[in-house]
Length: 234
Image (cartoon, rainbow, N blue to C red):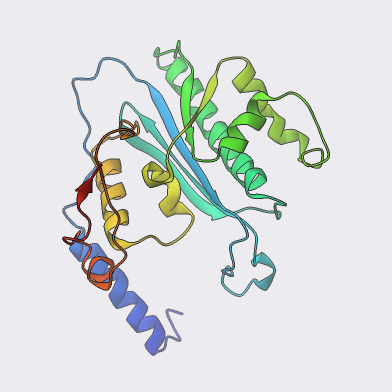
């Protein structure tokens, strides 16, 4: 559209420039005092996404997936894209997303090994779908999973060999959620702050203690600030 643009393209360009200007001070914090280079990752998927990819109507309802990979708290790889095929369940879409994240993790494991920083412990891959985690540890095949592509079972092999460890994370702490769909503004700001500041592990569970409530009022959605309705409670 560079040679034939319209009002919509001009407004979109202004939105992009306004976002870049407002976030020009956002930087990734790299901590030089870290001796160990440990890997961790988040993966997520949005099953039956109703959005279309541009003019490709055939992409409607194909899952959107994404992942973020950290090395010692520094985000080094991330992606957000459509899957090539549709999924029959949310578990299947989450499993395919975890498989894509696993491929990226294996690349970084090989790279760190070449640099002399061999990982001795399993890489933590945080996933918010418990069925996906259970399926990665279950070697049985039944009617609801027998159609899953064989290439995805590589993830199961890595879990069995102790290279990858899938851990459950609450949806509110799923940093890869922004790669799959639009979020409330204050949720997006909170997650990006955690990514930029190197929060490569989930927050400690608040079960039995206080946690912050989520408000869906218009002021929070537009302004991004948590209002007095989002108070701490037991």
